[in-house]
Length: 236
Ligand SMILES: [Mn+2]
Image 1: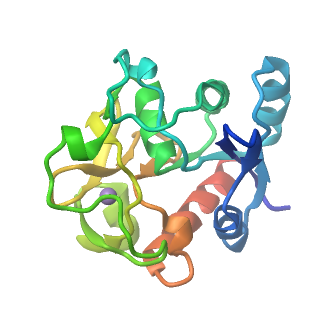
Image 2: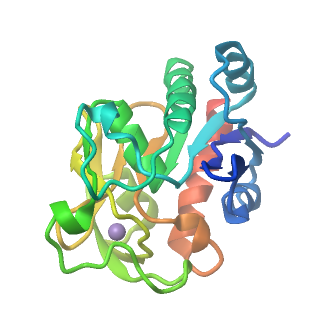
């Protein structure tokens, strides 16, 4: 039996719809996992039951993380937030950590997990972080547009054996202060953190880019998903 990976949904405030680009689940499935999409709920007993059924969790992209999570007032350049989603993902992540189950964070997921664990974010990179790099690219999703430099003493280097990879970039927020106990694994040439991990026996990693959109064309994306699903299997 494949391991079950709980995947958090995007939320459309206006249409009141959950949604998700299919590549998230396709990448999990192609790597040997069985993805299931969580409902957007604040029912704790429901989240208890559903998280108990999952062997691992993937936190996906989406709206801005509410700055209340890191005790800041909203800046004028803050994008749309979804407090319902912040609450639901907080409840899921709390259980993932309590139950020592593997976690993979992508884009918003990378930012959300950092905020949940006590870090902070730039609410808007163009107005709060001077950079020449376009972190919100115009090119299509599968096209890499900037480099990330990988630290050689990290699990990401051990996995890929490469010091530099090219990634896509669809974020206007970014990590300002990394949460305690998280360790950077890779950064953009402008110094922005693009990947981190939490040391310990259980796989706990997140990336700022969208590897699910690069799965078909880039070995580093397949290796990242592969290592996650393998870790979920060996942790069962
Ligand atoms: Mn970027």
